[in-house]
Length: 228
Image 1 (cartoon, one colour):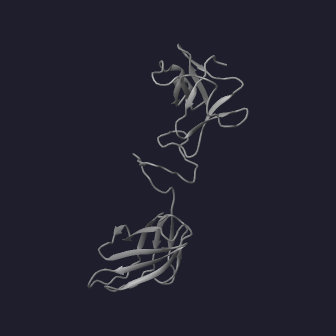
Image 2 (cartoon, rainbow, N blue to C red):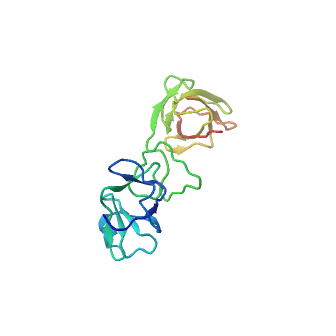
Image 3 (cartoon, helix red, strand yellow):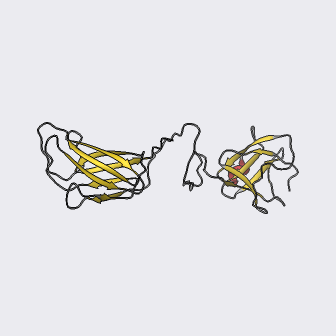
């Protein structure tokens, strides 16, 4: 056991645990030093790093080990306490290990930003049968609905029920109409009013004189929008 101890200010998203007891450790024994836990991708990077200027305690993600600076070198903290570090939930944004957050809810008190893509991992497709009034079912947060090909005169509307178990009463469903791969906003206006597990979808021919008869591909995404 190294002959130094630290009170650790553990970054959000991490916790210290004892491998012997499995209990969260808020502090190690006694110390006058308040140190932020430095995070390194590998143990080799940690050991090779220069003398710390901010923190005297560091954690290697590849070997799950904690080191302390003894004044001249990094020394692994081992012994009866069996200190290791693991990710708490939710994982802090910006962390690289693991790449997937297992938590079902991510709560933030400030702004969440990303330099990459934000979206759902998967969606689905469904094709309407029989008529434009036929109910379609797709239990996904995003996807496409392909309607029946039918005549829709200028100013007229079609309405059908969209059954989707992911929907709640106050959710928003953003929909965009396409014919093939071409956006058809100039001809169709598409909207949905949500209920619990269902939505009423209305398609309107918004032109003054053009009729249409093609199948419409409606791309959608569900936005969860609680009001309380």
